[in-house]
Figure 1 (cartoon, rainbow, N blue to C red):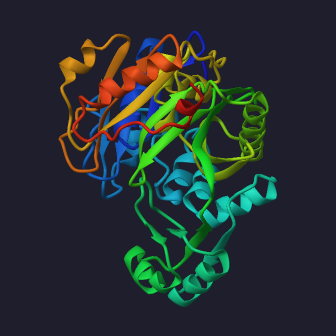
Figure 2: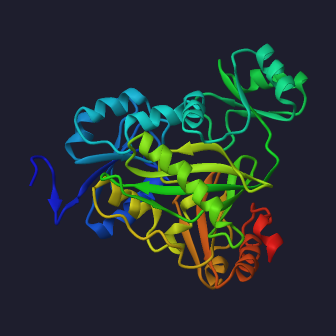
Figure 3: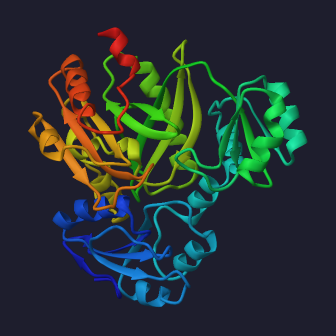
Length: 385
């Protein structure tokens, strides 16, 4: 047994997670059957995991205590101080590495990486003033979306400009010194790829999911897709594999993309962690994204990523619905996060399985009617049924 490493039959038992929200909670729930124990480092002062040991450390005074209780470290959220992750890397293995966080925290670095690897993206400009933002909007043609270079998720730190004259207002509203301005894409649907890479370079791909967002927040994810050309899936696989290999990545990586009318894919952004659009895998795949992330960071063989059945994930946002009625629906699984209700807050998700996509859509409509703030599903695959 390696000094300082708690192992049993090749499995690292003590896992540290940076962050203590619902993604960390779901990682722990997937890891307990493997004999893992979890310690969370919460730097916000407001943890919500409700599971495992939580070290609350908003003033960066308890890092040594956290490190003493873990063998390997991962994270549930990429908006962490990069220097903190680098400091931890001096003492314990961290997967994915600080390099992955550094790239994903900065949209300019991320776009540059996409360009270098030949992964197409929507046309974009980098601007550093309201005047440059207005010029970029005129050059790219409105509408455009302006995004803060750092921070920003679930629609935060973004603004849509329908006219170049809105630049002053958008610049002030976002409040960052540098923005990425992207041309709007005439896309058929928003999709995402979830893949996992092990310590030995082994890679496994999940089926592509279609996603529906409302107000910048994910509402629905469906996988696998009945009308997806195999070549499109292979293209997505090649894009995400290039990213995984370039970053010498270990763990689950998510890549959000737009699929255009001719079937081509444009990369939007990536996330170096388990991802909301992969929650369907908890009930709809042979091995969930959470278990596979833990397998990867521990150097274990990766699990089968095949879909069990057509599956849709519905996010429960703001207010919970009639949970008993939701659970009365056949082949429906409710995953609650033990969070108080609040506008725009992700409180839970529902995974629905069906024998085919027509039946799935009927079940999704029935379920969404039981959730107070769930818009009707508007998913492109329904046009082909």
